[in-house]
Amino acid sequence: MNLSVQLAPKHPRGLLLTNPVMTASGTFGYGTEYSHMFDIQKLGAIVCKGTTLEPREGNPQPRLAETAGGLLNSIGLENIGVRALIEEKAPIWAGWHVPIIVNIAGETVDDYSRLAAQLDGVAGISGLEVNISCPNITAGGAEFGASPGPAAEVTAAVRKATSLPLLVKLTPNTSDITGVASAVVEAGADAVTVINTLKGMTIDIARRRPVLGNITGGLSGPDIKPVALRMVYEVAGAVEIPVIGCGGIITPSDAIEFIMAGASTIQVGTASFNNPRAPLDILEGIEQFMIKEGVDDLTDLIGKARL
Ligand SMILES: Cc1cc2nc3c(=O)[nH]c(=O)nc-3n(C[C@H](O)[C@H](O)[C@H](O)COP(=O)(O)O)c2cc1C
Image 1 (tube, rainbow, N blue to C red):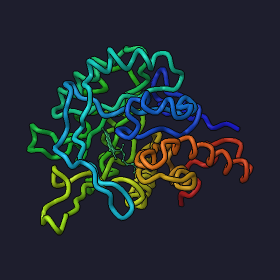
Image 2: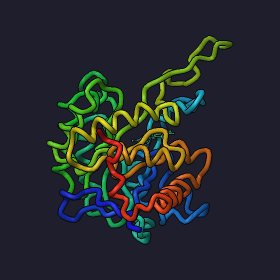
Image 3: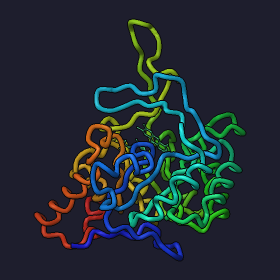
Image 4: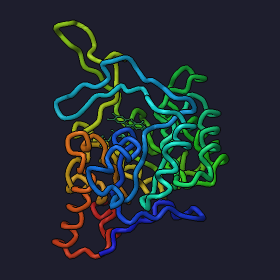
């Protein structure tokens, strides 16, 4: 059976994954936290926690709240910063065979560009994933990914600063997901990840206050799956580069739905908090489905539900 997927077909070096199961940024640390629990190198790729130029402590507590079918988080990009990542994490990754993709986040276009330049050529890093769900502080705090212009500006700046394969992670908090997708493709993205969390909130009625210290947070998990699936379906119909499906994937059949909607690979996020082995369980379930259905090549499933 062939489960391999080329995630950056237009890139000179490409980004070949042995299988379609990736981890979602912010839900799998730097990979090292999970490496004693199962053979994480069996996965297609690991996407690390969102990384900024300087270390960040994140938002005030509480930063997590469960919902009926998911999770609200307002972590606020707590991370060790790019220097520590290069000095402490990349040397470990350089000894692994699973590709590591570094997720980057910034407040200005220049932040993204400087991050990309610093990560270019670092051993152990196979690609970048650009989180464009961050507020653009030079434009009143609107998310870069909310409209095509700023999304393309960030993508073009990162493309210029690095020779690494480039994934751009789209936000669902836009009324123009296909317009944003097309704009980042034009600006040099090798693949698009669809989607990041949906903005939401929850209230503690006894305290008469929002539960999260930051008032609002990002909704993830099964609650968002139908929205994510719809966006993958739409984006896959609008662009000709690989789409990475993400949002509420808990079971192998969730993953197969995203692949049939047009995703070449998928990311597992919130599911890892309930079951740290979830990405591997999902991979094994996809393999079992292919055996049962007599499918020899994963690419034969991609987009198969598209009308
Ligand atoms: C606790 C937490 C932290 C996250 N941190 C990041 C991050 O740093 N960068 C990013 O691009 N996405 C981040 N995400 C979003 C996930 O990568 C993913 O896009 C989202 O959770 C939807 O997938 P899921 O429903 O499988 O969790 C985070 C999600 C959670 C739950």
